[in-house]
Length: 125
Ligand SMILES: [Zn+2]
Image (tube, rainbow, N blue to C red; front, side, top):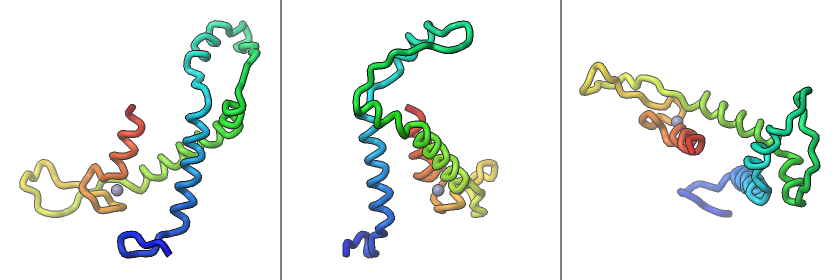
């Protein structure tokens, strides 16, 4: 059995990592729609639709097949993590009474905690 930090590795961690890696790989292999959509916006008809003839690769299709559900899933994950990792006053004695020390109520790290920073940094670029 694989050991990490003196405790047994949770098999669920490997499963979650595998799933995330698969989504990341599939997304990275597909083409970006940024340029195409800028062009397609200009072709919108009166009814608000764009008739499209698309040339899609196998990688694009496997990305598009699950893209909507996966984006929703990640947004849900982000919201759930934010709900868990929130600041609370630590109640300790601060050198500055006007700026009390805040800690994360989930992981108890000093605010902003590593989980919140990871979410913030990932979404900022
Ligand atoms: Zn936290």
